[in-house]
Length: 222
Image (cartoon, rainbow, N blue to C red; front, side, top):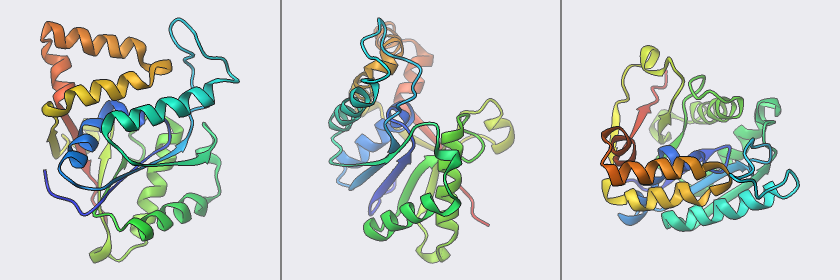
């Protein structure tokens, strides 16, 4: 994994980081690279309330905030930015609002790498709107000063349209932190956490592949 100056991770919801990038975040932190995670919302409109339910519509934002903070601790992340937007509204924000927000973050942090979703290949409208704003922000920068952009995509046609991911990060040594990060978001992830734990116990190849390797597409700017 290339040594970075600073890594800026931008996702719209608590737990977006857990499934696909928590091992990468943990590895960067362990290797001494500063990481900032900017999370746009508290996932107030999440469908899950725990299994069995322990949250209500009124308590869910507070619970998910605590879960996000616990996930950050599991990764060793010190710089967590909760930006205060409302869940399921990102696609309706004024065009420049997120661009201005992200521009300020990049000016402050001077990252060499940004990680986010791939526009139009990340299923949820909040995911796509966040990704599009990240791309617009970076497109405004002069190419020599622009950080790299590594993208997560999981739409059913991602590989068909984009090809295979061109970046594979070995996070086997951080699998325990990854499972702990997923488990921290327990209102949303109890079943998936159990799947991971059972897969490890049974040495299930499909589960271990997802757990030990995190894959990204390198975004190509025009």
